[in-house]
Image (cartoon, rainbow, N blue to C red; front, top):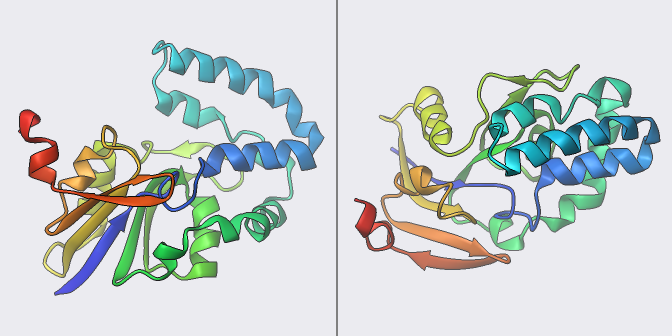
Length: 199
């Protein structure tokens, strides 16, 4: 049976949210995207206020994609930010499965560059930027894991994430250790000890 580790991506393997950073990157280089900013800002505010779910926000926040040179923008983004991936991930002891709410069009390029083995993330229409299906977050990460990975062939050893609250579902998959990532540092904990009051 193959042994793997599971990693969240944003604020876990890099120190920021990659989707937001990419949108800002595009706004600076392709200023005709800026008119989309007020609409995105309004939707973000409504989500922060719990008036709309984040899935709704994710459906519209990359609608600027048809108006930029997509492949060039994505490659230029990672030309600048590939170095931000933490070295401890590049030196990982086992095969890696990255499970992230970030868009597939963004992480697939990075996967090609640094060669991590597996990737499950939020699906988007490459041409329109619109989200396809559900945002790959919280319990949906585990649902996608079970959909795409043969449980008879894989054993999850360690799980890494910056968010104890949002990624409790994927932490539960670890058979060995869990790591809470804070400012790039790995803080080991035991799942049953950390979440004992909720079990």
